[in-house]
Image 1 (cartoon, rainbow, N blue to C red):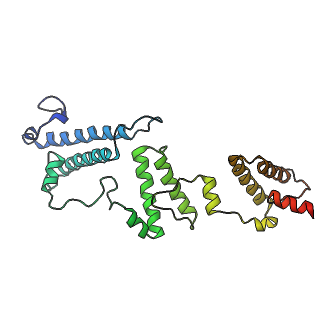
Image 2 (image 1 turned 135 degrees about the vertical axis):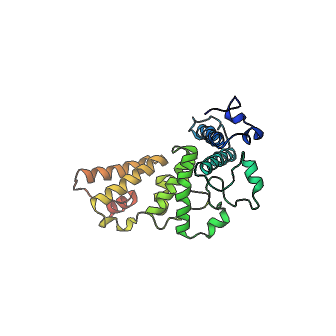
Image 3 (image 1 turned 135 degrees about the horizontal axis):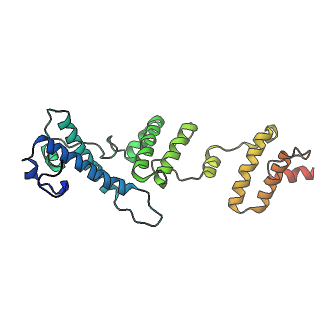
Length: 247
């Protein structure tokens, strides 16, 4: 079926809508659902760095609400629901006595910082668990916001001591490990070769990022001793090696 009045479905007027039969109305709503869905997909497609987004978050929320409205009307007609159907979202909203208290995207009560700070750790984990896939759907899985939310969820699941702030956590893997998974080098002499190798590799990467060449070379030397099964002793830090040589 096509628009019986000619032109595109998005040019259909309210008066024309109310003169059509049920089948044409259903076709109109499903056509408009597809129309807004295409705009949403275009708006959330990942863009190259430096390109301006085609729509703001609020505009995307508006498009999602319009798409849901038309899908809702079409489903009502298809299922022969007793609920009334409407030409536009404005018509439907004007009939509401109480406006919804829900976010147009999440469809759950919108979380504020005050609410988040009162959450238990389990509630916070559920919050990040909801946020991660929503941001992925809106912005794509390569967007910094989506990546950060997914990373926070994973860290909370794997580390019971990790409790992120509402604003999120943009720390790198090394920064996170340094803060939340410190290595107790006082037990270094009791480490297995595998544990020592892992420790020195971490230190190598850290010192390389800091530009500390001397410390980097020290840890690389310790790794080589472990890998080569050298008879030479290994030490946790350059200072520990120096103290041993002075004794």
